[in-house]
Length: 314
Image (cartoon, rainbow, N blue to C red):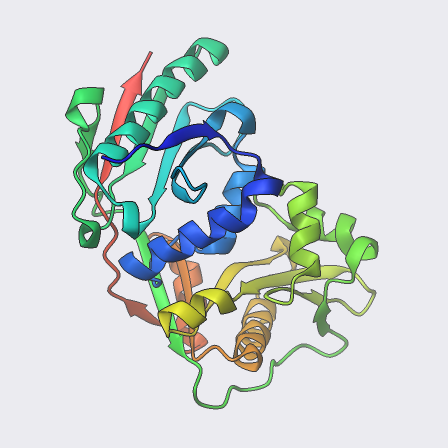
């Protein structure tokens, strides 16, 4: 194995190299598989609670980022850790894959000592196309048997044909989030874990990420849809997939067709940007969302994710 330098990540400095790495990995292993580049950025900025220690980069002597590993969780104190790893196809060797696993395992032990509650670390294997082996058993990881009752479900929709206009109750309208004046109301509508302020600003300013909201007759935000594209990935992959990232309706506003309308608006936005396919991911148990997606013309897709492993510590 050639010599690689391992160091901490400085996101603002390393962002371009990290995105180049993630795009190369996705193109080699499947751009229809989650996480997208936007999702990786969110994890790096908003789900890694100690960036200086919980993100690690391996780079070549010339300074190219060859691999990335990160430990993330939904809250700063959590019994669950996810170890995500990305490796550039040009440097995909098992020794480097093992080094990333060793780092993640060692760092998880340190996190255990910091928060003093038992932890379970989850790691996903690399895609079979890379032909990489990681010594999971050496570091105490066991194969996680698939749960037939709950798993990631992928949906896709062709965007080459015309799309219907959103249908809303009288007095309701759909518009993009309007910067800071909408931000507080939008965050109160958003039930997912908060996004880092700087990353939120990046999302609002991007012409590849859209926040669409349904506004009630009195001006309140009632539902939203976030959707995204990655033109750089399109260029190197030859596939123009757009993603529905998040969609949600306030509980008291449900049953009025708002989710259907804002989803349709999101699909039209992806189509305007040039996407020929829309994709999204949810859980197999989210049957209410499945009905919504089927009504909007989505169909289940057979997307195979790599095997997952788990390691309880503490």
